[in-house]
Image (cartoon, rainbow, N blue to C red; front, side):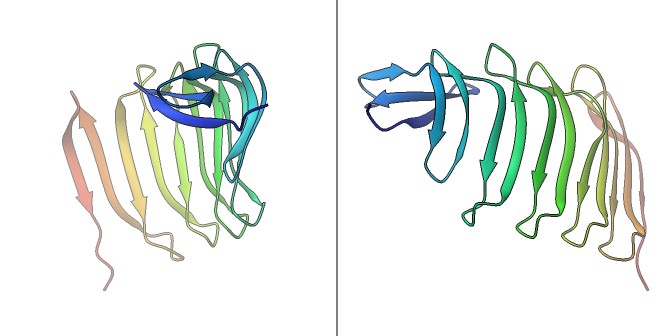
Length: 152
C-alpha cells in the first residue's frame, strides 16, 4: 500500500494515496505518520480520531460525522498531559461551552456558544491565580459589553 497523506480541501481534511494531482481517496483504518490515526471513508475522517505529540503522548481526541465534520466531544492536551481544551461540536461548529486550560491545569478561558456556533460569552483568566482578566458578552456577533480586570 502507498503511504497515506492528508491535505485540506475546503473545510475538510482529506486522507489519500498517490499525489495531489492523481489523488486516490482512502477508505479504511488510517495511521498518518507523526499526526494521528482513525477511520476513513472515501478519504473523509469518520468516528474517533486520535492525534499525538512527537513523544507519542495524546495531543487531541476528536469525533467526526460521516461528512468529515467535527461532531461530538473534542479534547486537546498539553505536552505534559494536562487537559488544554474541552469542547463539543455539532456538524463542524462549536455548540456548547468550550473550556481552555493553562499547562498547570488552571482555567484559561470559558467560551459559551449558541447551538448555531456563535460566541455568546467569553471569559479569560490570568494564569495560576484564576483571577478573571476579561469578560465579553456578544450580541449579533459583536462585543456588546466588556469588562477587564488588571492585576496590581
